[in-house]
Length: 212
Image 1 (cartoon, rainbow, N blue to C red):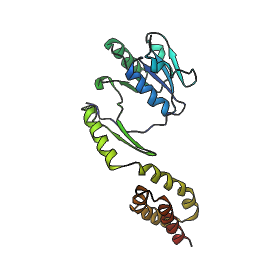
Image 2 (image 1 turned 135 degrees about the vertical axis):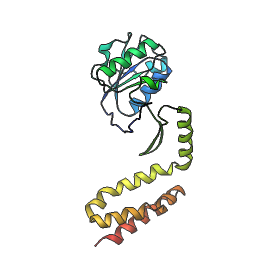
Image 3 (image 1 turned 90 degrees about the horizontal axis):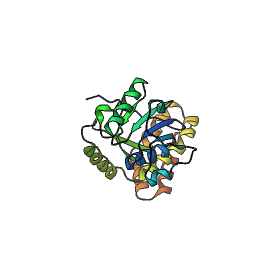
Image 4 (image 1 turned 90 degrees about the vertical axis):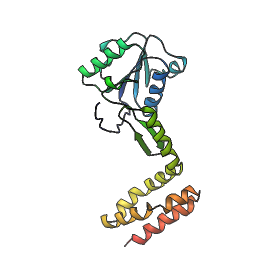
């Protein structure tokens, strides 16, 4: 089995091809649109929920069977059909044109796989079993969701607001001290307890203490 290289990719305004029009394709398209991709869907028919996403701006529908030329400039290719011959053709065409391809539930035809993802604001943790067991990947994701609660979203948002000021105001050595102190657990625990004002105060106090 392939040894997959983990990577996060910015799909904003990037062309992605989805072959298929069923519920699996629907889930793929929803996620791709959430991440800013321009999605072309190739399928003779679509489930109603997927049809509602077609706006001819960021999501386009080619109402036909798949053909090789449909790949065009797509930087990622997903094949979500139940027809083996179509999945084989999509995988072969994508590989021939050096385009990463994912064939749903068929890792042997994939050049990339989609992990199970846990999100808490800017925190994203991707879990993969290399195609061995998607169910186990989802189980691990659930465990991580219990470990990292919704406070992580507020926590990271708060830390982000300080990045520019700290970089501008503190020398390298003091920046390291600042980030070690504000990420030692106290701020996160205050946010978890819904004491955001106190959390902000801890960061402010730390920052002021390091100014020359």
